[in-house]
Image 1 (cartoon, helix red, strand yellow):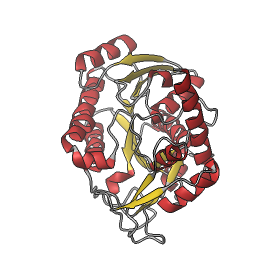
Image 2: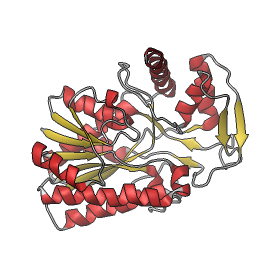
Image 3: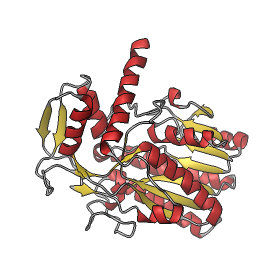
Image 4: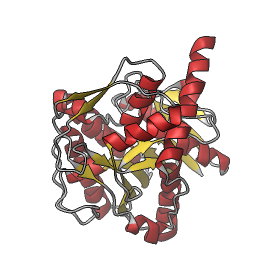
Length: 329
């Protein structure tokens, strides 16, 4: 199958590209490399371009003629979205419209879309199901609600079909050691904690210790990136086999607090790094865990790596690999 992976040089997209290529698919990665890296495209073909440039995007569709698209090219940092809302509306909303319009013009009717648990805001109950009200509390979540609405409206009047996957907290790295998170300015808790343990940061900041949780810190559902990548493969097959749309959560349903993540990180690395407590950040809900029964039932998703210590171990191994690469460069 010919698949265009937009944002496929990034963290999650590169893991999906790996599986797609292993299965024998013909893959083209379209990425502006703002957060992705050319080294992450270990198979398939890379076209460097931005969704804002519709001429380049059109040329990719003309030359490659994809049968399906996977869309990972979004800005994803909650705190940044609060500070730079217009950037998030431009990239996550306007650029998604560019992609959908190009797909429509070329008759490409299958899309797997990266969404987020941020669409729920502060849920009324935990774990949160797909039926929960959409009440985003930051621009990032709002832009993803808008993207989902675009797809629903387009599907209602055409042959277009989609699966929107609402991510929870993605972490870890390829167990084989080839891929991982390599953001220039990492904000994810586990990555920041590991880089602090490695001496790249002098301390780890914990934002908020007075939340209504057992230890006062935020609780999140951490999912291994390889399990999430497999969910995208199943989503594509679901559309092909059923011709139906779907919006599904993808998480383990197990929550860990910030303090618990720090404890496990210290255990894995053997480093008792410094932690500073800060005030809450805007846009952070106290707790967020997934009810993922729908994706398990409809698509047969069965996670393999539901273990926080394993998730952090694979991420730590990746950090050691990155250090070697930097030393060689």
